Image (cartoon, rainbow, N blue to C red; front, side, top):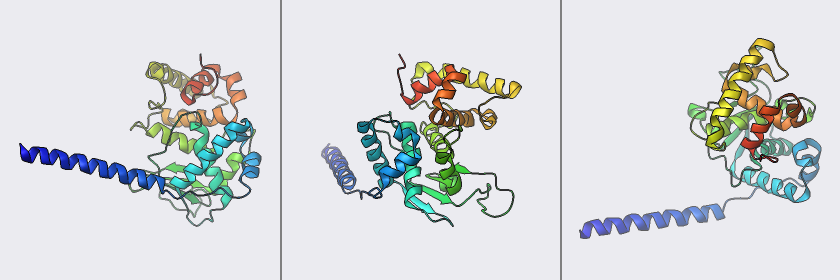
Length: 260
């Protein structure tokens, strides 16, 4: 009995020590300051930020700073400029801005390539169809983005595409342990079947009739969720007009607007 009590006390003491060290490490986390002209860049490049009120903009800036303090951004044959860092962080925050206390616990590093690559990560040659990727295996906690597509996603405000947002949506999907196009960690359980059915019927209709939705979304539910999320954040006005059912449930997923 004495040994058992001592063991219990030892375990409790160890838990207290680990908790204390974790709190200290969190408090001592190096804060990566935003560049001096961050406000100008956010205003010029990030429509989502520009449309927020002043207090929400401040909250967005703080979330961007926290992301940059927690996530390494490494160039692979590419120079990582302050603008690139800011746009990556903005893409990370946009889909989770209204989700309180969100952290990408499944991401440690973003690798920035200069341009497209193939599935063997080659950056040379003609067959390079990949513009972004959520890592697996040895790259389990990494994401790969391309510098050109990153910037293009924020420069082109009239289309429905943003590769960086697309890849961060994959991470959100992955957070519940399965990449299946259903973000159960943020979608209320009572709406899961509704979302699955809406995805299936929309994908089937896209294959039959085509769509203004990027046809890459018809390849699988995983890609559909990422593609339609790009559409939702890039052109919510057009999505609401053309696909009101999709727009309404994406509002529920991302906690935006009045969902009733």
